[in-house]
Amino acid sequence: MDAMSNPYMPYPARIDRITIENNERDLKTFELVFVDPAHEKLFEHTPGQFAELSLLGTGECPIGIASSPTESGSLLFTVKKAGVVTDELHRSREGRVIGVRGPLGNAFPIERMRRKNLVIVGGGFAFTTLRALIRFVIDEGHRSDYGDVTVIYGARNPGELLYKAELEEWQSRDDLEAHITVDKGSESWIGHEGFVPTILGDVAPSAQDAIVVVCGPPAMIKFTLPVIERLGFAPADTILSLEMRMKCGIGKCGRCNIGSQYVCKDGPVFTLEQLSGLPAEY
Amino acid sequence: MNVLLLKKTDLPSFLETLAKTRLLIAPLEDRTGSSFGPVEDVTAVRLDYRNTSLSAKATVFPQTETLLTFRNGEGEEWTPETPETVLFGVRPCDARSLTMLDKVFRWDGLDDPYYVKRREKTTVVALACNEPGPTCFCTSVGGSPADETGADLLATDLGDALLLRAVTPRGDALLQDAGDTVQPADSTAVETAKGLATQAEARLAPVRIPDNARHLAELFEADVWTDLSFGCLGCGACTYSCPTCHCFDITDEQKKGAGRRVRSWDTCTFPLFTQHASGHNPRMAKHARLRQRILHKFSYCPENFGEAFCVGCGRCVVSCPSGLDIRGILERLDQTVSAAEKAA
Image (cartoon, rainbow over all chains, first blue to last red; front, top):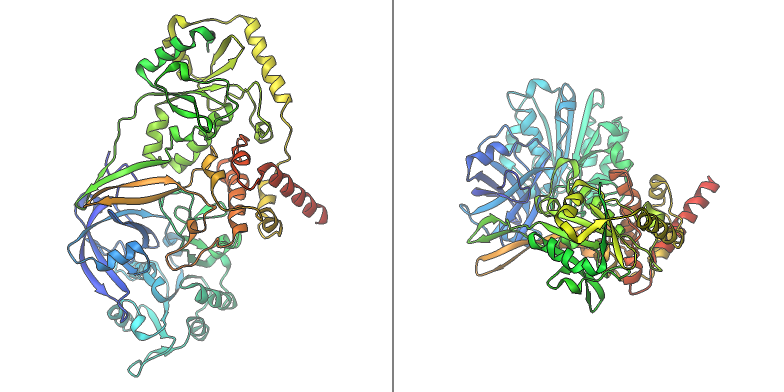
């Protein structure tokens, strides 16, 4: 038996490139390449899914996959330095071989999103799986499957924005409307200034034939959901992604449940309609 | 299926026959009273126990087990030899609990390889309860003192002999192996066993369990949890002794670049169980953790697996250092549900 049939065995993957995302240097994006090309084929993911990053001797941590399956050859994970595993990951250098276990969890409902207008709302470093989704829908092979794509993304300050070069590129595209905002700008900042819910209210994308996907810190979610509701999005068309402490990632260890649902296997993606039927324990 | 009789005087040779080709795990006396362990001396096997201090779940789901080993950054799957095992003399509640663990570890077609490997090699010989203990309540949660669920073979103690009833082909095979240590059972023995089961059942006091998992879930915000959890120390003794609790942790151990990744029993009664790296904790309060334990068993499991994950063994009642009694908790919840229904 090997990694292919044992869900606890990570696939070895090499850190090919590390990008420091912010001034505080506590957000880094790791580009991973599978050591065994056969594992790359087995790792078929969809935007919204996550994986357990595995450092043998230290442990594992669940991280959303920031790359789209359309970007073949490698996987991206943007990791905040927060605990024991992420701390060691942050101290790792390019070339180190770590482990990847996944893909885990459900995904954004890309089939249900077809022919719909998409409103993608993100805040802070929760933007990672939204990047995967955006890259997926603006991919040449997929762009025509979707209607208008509006992105609203905010961070505390310009330095905290992830994927800065890419954001710039998106703003110049005509098949994507990107509104980038910061809570507080700097002298050189020429974009929006203001909180995500405010900007969302100002941009006011139509809820007609549209699905909204929102990921961000709890405070942002709390103030964004009423705006989404006011814009007319139905709870079934409002999609969120949850975080929870996890271990196994496959619905056995009993750690990430919210009521009868397991964030690791029934989630992390839920509609607001689904969440309203669950206890508020997340 | 065969029904055979085993004289108590032949029990040691019966067990020795089984142990020839299998690992024999049975109740043995220890400082806690009795617990399951590998049998070295068949005369040490005890059948006169009420119930063991810990359940039999460790046979298929050890308290700590290696998932993989590593050396210099390279991991290797841990594939220990798993011998054919006979779990002999488990109470029917424990035998039934294995069918619940099966549901979790084989959920959604995703098998837990470590559990499944052990489970598939384990033959379960249950021992009917003639004298249920004071904290037993199996009949209130769908079991009974002579329940065959989860057993391959059900034994009933008739005093000077054991009546052995094969429940599955696997149990039958065990009897075949036993050869001439067992003999045909007459109808008197069968009737005596039935009578003992009926008597035992009659001795169990019913516990009122909230019958609707949905209604129980509606109590999520009720004040009753704070009250119920007042005495809880969060020690986890109830979950470790529980035959159906299956939550686990995964941690790494290493020394000089080599080590192993292990999983160990964990418990939802510990605050750190759900604490995020950010410090956020969805179940920060003690009442939320007790509620999780109760609702997981009596609301979420019925929703996910079609039955409550409690076999009424009463171990959590015995092991709780502050005297919390799950029967009292369930009756109180039942009253709260009824009161809420009346008010509606």
